[in-house]
Length: 460
Image (tube, rainbow, N blue to C red; front, side, top):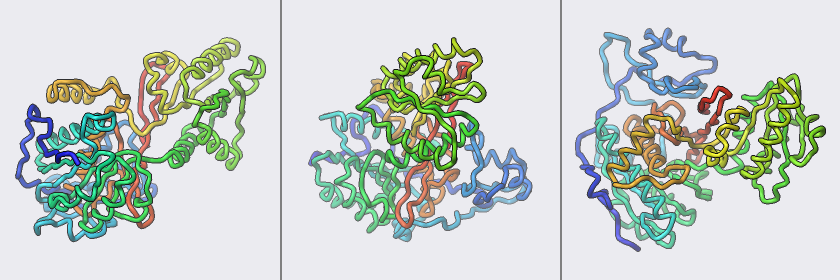
């Protein structure tokens, strides 16, 4: 087992001072759970406040594409001039062992939040290097939170793939944590899950871990959504977005493709809802290919592969169709992998009104993203690794969301939509409970390349 990494691991240049300043208690009149058909205007009027006051108390309402949804929690501020008092959040499915969240006899919302990171933090392989970058993002989030009066105490352990996590959990500091981020490997989750349940600790599982523990332990927050869950979520949102369009599924003859699960789920949904759709082949001659498209409705094209080579052929084929059929309307629905092809396919993404589903996206035009890159470079004297998902940004989003949520709600924090009011730089989060077990992230988005050469994100 390699040495334990403390808060200042590899960060002597990163001037984080762990402060002991008590966190300030969030003040608002009450927390309101949105009911069916409620509107921002109606909620404001009912509570004697202006729409501007309501939006100011819930900054997420300013997010492009924001929609008020049944079950969301929003903060109701005090009307102008009304005396403000502190209200605790109502009981929203508190975690097991909730009494233990008041460690040392103090309310979690009024003290330093203790965070543990249990990930492979080394430079021996790609896993370690990526998780080191993720960890740096966690520390940057803590620094930003500290500037907003939220104090954290962070400890980190190098839990490599061959590490015995039970030995790590014997460290007395582990039991003092309010939040543990990790593990990276499925085989380590059972021990950590049991430990967290015993000590009333929340665990954020940041990446792909396959385990039944999420169904049994209410203390677990799982960010990763497996392929089955995502296929159904993407197909459901597809139907909402393209309900008046004509779907065209193109078989691309790729025997290595893993996208058959999505197109099968989508076709099953079409058939259940009696939706007319067409299936054609990328190798079909022009006349046969053309017959699969509608001339009266917008066509939405779905390939059964994510590979760039077949995408190139599809663009060429669709361009020919547009030339021979003036006025035909075409949109395309792609895959997360397409985000890696932006530099080579951007013009076609705009031309064919492409929608790409994903669980993360960082806009290249975002001023927040640019500031983050600059701050990372300044702190660590290097750039982030050039993965499409920037792991430091993921660590920042995860840590900021979880720590702020615990600061605001203590043991009642569930990560539900609208609870935190944090707009992510890259990685959206909102959690839903799995039966009597833990909570799983349900956030996803579509990146839309519009025909007027703009990029927008649709968040769900």
